[in-house]
Amino acid sequence: MPRNALMGAIGLLAAAALVAPSIGLYRVFSYVAAAFILAVVASASIEHRGSSLEPYTGLVAGLAGTFVVGLTGIWLLWSPGVTNYAYVLGVPRPTLVYFALLWLAPALASIYYSLVFDRIGSEEIVDEIIADARDHQQRAALPLAPQRSDRTTDVEGDDD
Image (cartoon, rainbow, N blue to C red; front, top):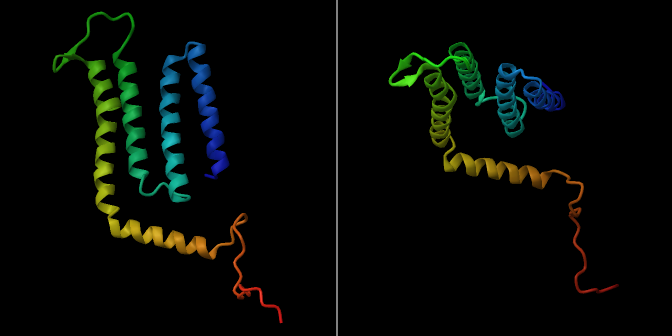
């Protein structure tokens, strides 16, 4: 997806996240907010890595899955008029779904990715990336950088 289209989609999701609760569509709002979060994470990974979600595809897909299952679980198990809930592990089922799928699973996924990327991104790899970036910058013609010339100039001012 092109960058401008993705940013336009994020803008539409943000507008929908503002409109949905104002007209009383709270369930729709929760799904729109989850899609907004996922779109921002996906756009950040695309901006960081280029044009694909690698290596963040698993994280984005996992977050999407936990958000959809968690929000659906909450909306199926919870109702404002209910005063007597079924309990699991001493906690009402909607609260357990909320905690497990909307807090615990994303937190564990982020910890997992931080540990995996720490092993992948060793100092040698980081140094190689920085060296490649410096080489590319030195070879590139930057619009505001002073032009370098290969000829030598007379420093002492001797005019012949």
